[in-house]
Figure 1 (cartoon, rainbow, N blue to C red):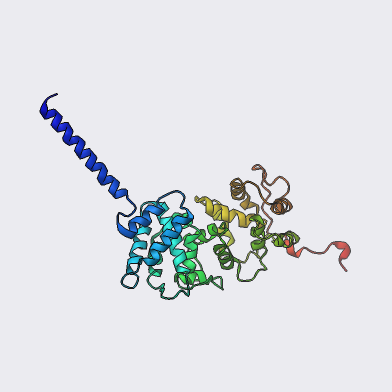
Figure 2: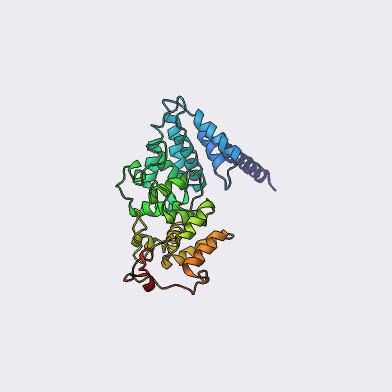
Amino acid sequence: MSLATRRTLSWLGTLAVLAGLVVGYWQLPAHGGVAGEIRWLLARDRVSAEAQRRVAELLWDAVEGEGIARDNILSNLLADTDERVVHGALCALSDLLGSRGLPGFDHANLRPVFSRWFQHATIEAKVAHLPYTLLCALRHHIHQPPERPTELWSTLRWAERPTEGDARWVIAATLSLEPDARPAVERVLFGEYTGNIVEHRLRVLDALNAAQAESAQSCLPLLGPDYSRLEMPIGLDKLRQMASDPIPQVRWGAGRILAVAGDPRGLPAFREWVKTKRKLPANAEKMLTDLFGANWRDPAFVPPAPNAAQPPATQIAPAPESQP
């Protein structure tokens, strides 16, 4: 090997080492300052509780020029191409927006950060990042869950009823077991009172309140053929369309609502959701059997759609022998 060749190889080796050092530097947690460290903490499949606390500390301390530094960091994180980073940023943002009453903390600069992201986000992104998209929306202008069903829409200056895309997002949110998000979305869909049997039955499905199981069972059959008691801001026809939605969480949420309401058109999506669970609570199994029969799990078993010409099941005429 000639001297020139050896020198060339030596230089190439040196350049390779330098390139490796540069790449390693860019991978360091501290590269890019606070934003770089936060991104490094969030860019993983599972973010530990310790890492979440560190992210919260970094964001809490990132205050320059009335919080502008914090807002810029969050805006950049929400624009990241790594969905894991976006998910973690929305989680952190929901916590910051929910930190009401803390001295020296102003939400005014944080709310536009979420609003800008939400207005341009796809329905797929809004659903994928539940429950944090819902929690951020609830805390956008008001610092507590809405007391009236329409307040969620007005929170982001929407119309009284949601757009089609956001209706799909809210229906997907009914799958959430998050203790703040679930009650809020129930109020949005079913009102602030607790007398809605559909709401009770969804809770039976998720084993959220065993005490409601008896109440849910005692009201079978729930709805008449016209389903006039569904009483939701999202119409029945829309729900039936959502039961075939391309986004799994949307069709599962719609299928669950239709199934517990006694509408067999929700069963295909409902069965699909059930397959994602290890098992249903015993009360939920009995509820579905009472509604559709013992074969409700069989894909070949599809009960006929209710006959709209018949009287509602909740208003069945008395038996002949009881009539005067």
